[in-house]
Amino acid sequence: MPDSSTDDTLLLVDPDLDFLEWATRHLAANKLRILRCDNAQNALKVVEKTGVGVVVAAMEMQPFDGMELLDRVLQISPQTLVVLTAGFPTTGQIIEATQRGAHDVLRKESLAFELRPVVESALQTREERRSAGEPAAELPKHDGRVKMIGASRALQEVFKLVGRVARSDAPVLIAGESGTGKELVAKAVHEYSPRRQREMITINCGAIPENLLESELFGHEKGSFTGAIARRAGRFEQADGGTLFLDEIGDMPLSIQVKLLRVLQDGSFSRVGSNETITTDVRIIAATHKNLSEEVSTGRFREDLYYRLNVVEIRIPPLRERREDIPLLAEYFLQRITRKNGMARIRMSAEAVSTLQTHAWPGNVRELENTMARACALASSNILLPSDIPLASAPGKSPAGVTAALDRLINHAPADEDLLSWLGREMAGRVVERAKGDLKGASHALNLTAEELRKLLKR
Image (cartoon, rainbow, N blue to C red; front, side, top):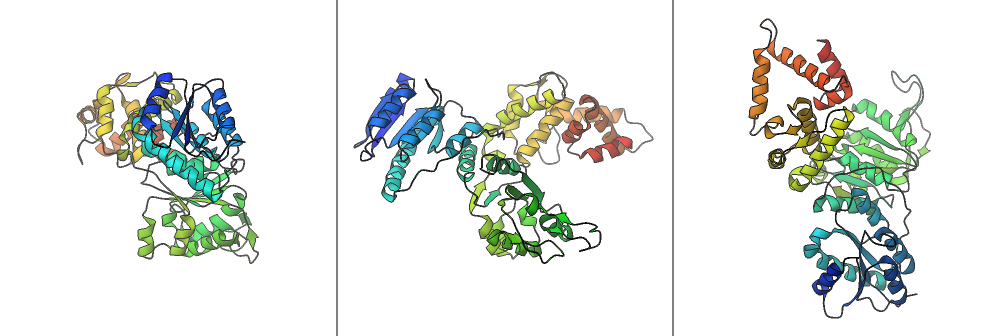
């Protein structure tokens, strides 16, 4: 076993010798001993023979990568803190590394600003853990399936928090504006958790009438109310052993909040119309675009339920606060839309990217996705220009390209038909044609349900 007394020892591991030289100078400090290795195998030998407080290691290394080095270091010395670095770490790498015990994951381009404070924080945390005798958690390996796009520091902090919270069964409250991707984060928490082999069931608390929401959550007995023609298991029963995602929890009626509180307290409930007590083992993840603390102060949300749900809060920043993610997201949506619809590849001009980055995006990622879908449907060439992107440059004002397209349509409108109805049908028909008959893809581009699109086409 390594000597645990030398807590102020730092090991740098990177195949780039220039980086090792720079990092050594950058981190030099009194009482800090800095060791260096250019491959993972030698790094393990150092950890085995020397008490190392913190390891800073590259993801890409030989003869095995930084993720495997992380596992092996923690097996040898569970109290050692490991910081991984990568040129462009993926969502999965950040979440998985955090879940497997990494203290932090840093992009190499940000090391000049972040490496020193992160290492100092790690050394301090190492000393506090050693003094308290806190053991390191052993976490299972797995393959995550959720893909979240973003390189901003703010979003990477969300990824790390997902990795940390996924390992427990603590309730999670995901807060953020509409369209920021709260359900995607909930799926990530579930799929990186020990419950991932069971189902995550989603229910939108604001989309179901109050008289039906209780039955939807807890189930009902036959004859318990008009229309209850058979016994029905509720979402809590269906999610037993898995995860229940309560979307828009801020819209849940107070009468249902009382019953939800009981489930969170002791895991028990009764079906509507029954006195039988049922127990369930469910991990609760809730999401809201509302400020629940304000809802509590106005009496629209129970304070005791708020604290039960808000054990761990994940706050997703709006898109306008992470503009560096916009080109990555736009490119991802472009590729996905064109591939799904069998279209030729469409590229964005530099001017189009600039247009996207200067927009306020009140609808966040969902608005960006719908915008790219409409741009693909209406693009006049395989290169998107600012005029091809349907954004309002000011409230109530359309871009010149959209205005011109509307003028062309109006000029061809039949004189004996209602103009707005005709424009709606014409637009729907063109988008369906561009989507090669794919009603689901066309309805997504038009921000309509498939049923609404069918009705519009029939008219």
